[in-house]
Amino acid sequence: MAWLRIPAGYLAAVAIMAVAGVLAQTQFVLSDLKTIGADIGWDDRLFMTRADLVGLTPTYAVFIAIGFAIAFIAAALALRLIQAPRGAVYAGAGAVCMAVMLYLMREVFFGASPIAGTRSTAGFAAQLALGAAAGWLFAALTARR
Picture (cartoon, helix red, strand yellow):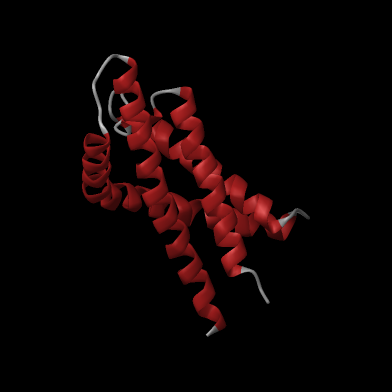
């Protein structure tokens, strides 16, 4: 059953990144709306968060799954060549994956990011930080015991 730790860790990292990423991006969008004067109560905030979780998470998860597959394989290969902390390498891979994925999405959509919460520097950085956390989670869940 030891072989199961890699696919289970991968799926956990993708799921956590997708859900946390959508939650973060929604809050950044709502914050931007409040900044321009929109009246957003807790009911609105909860409704919009739920709507984004249901509507955006599955699609975002597909992109994350593809990106993490590439990034985590690259990290595994890098660990064969360099002496570095495993968690740091996978965290870096997760962050770089998110940066590249969000950049490519923006390029494909004519310069406008389809993940609206990443249009600000803080929103973009939040997604990278979550990618790093998901990469670290993958490393922790897949470590040999």
